[in-house]
Image (cartoon, rainbow, N blue to C red; front, side, top):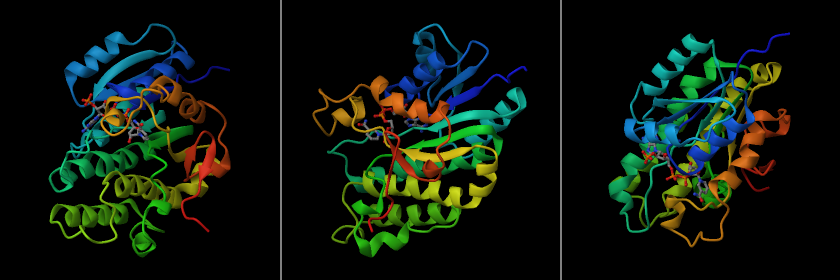
Length: 280
Ligand SMILES: NC(=O)c1ccc[n+]([C@@H]2O[C@H](COP(=O)([O-])OP(=O)(O)OC[C@H]3O[C@@H](n4cnc5c(N)ncnc54)[C@H](OP(=O)(O)O)[C@@H]3O)[C@@H](O)[C@H]2O)c1
């Protein structure tokens, strides 16, 4: 029996966890397989591809700026034409912000990369997944309702579609930008609503695709990599003792290459365990 070569893609893969995911996928896959290392800058993509260790799958670079409205859709269509479909996608891109950034000034760009970028990737790649495919959004343990005041839960709980998630994220973004979120129950740390919005997007799409995906062994999930030593986390915390991106990538790649655990479907997973969306 001949096996179809696998195709994997990682967004925001020029550094940090994204680059580690590309390297780990390439090492675990075979020479006939392809791993797409994508990013927003041609120079950084080219440099990262050139620095990828040899062995395993072929690593190819592609430009994918997740804030460009049709870019994910165009690339997904192109890869489907080139390979017949896609097997593994990690939505990992994140905009780097630091403690000194004024949330009102960065929230537009932040939501565009982290949230609308995620829903663009989900919309583009979900229809192109082959049987046994994996569509995984890198979120965080902060992406559960536990981190949001109960009075705000209705904004993200039980949303039926990606459009509905985008609408709620846009309303939160607008409230941060115009200052009306200040002094209310919204957390000042923009990472929290943004990560909850990412997990809400996975949950919404999972609600629509669950039965069809189960029949085809497809996994759609959000993951938490845990605290890692990257340039982004170093802006906020002392991460000198934290795991490297390569270490953090191990359980994520296992999720991408191992058998599908039905309880992971549509959930936020950390080290193979589901983190409950809502307490109680
Ligand atoms: N670091 C942690 O401790 C931690 C903890 C929990 C969750 N996470 C999550 O893990 C993921 C990776 O984090 P990280 O720390 O590895 O981040 P990172 O080192 O800052 O890397 C972010 C990546 O996203 C890319 N990016 C930024 N804007 C983009 C855009 N518009 N389109 C496409 N790519 C874009 C960056 O590209 P450039 O090279 O061009 O800037 C870079 O490759 C994120 O989702 C993050 O929230 C991280």
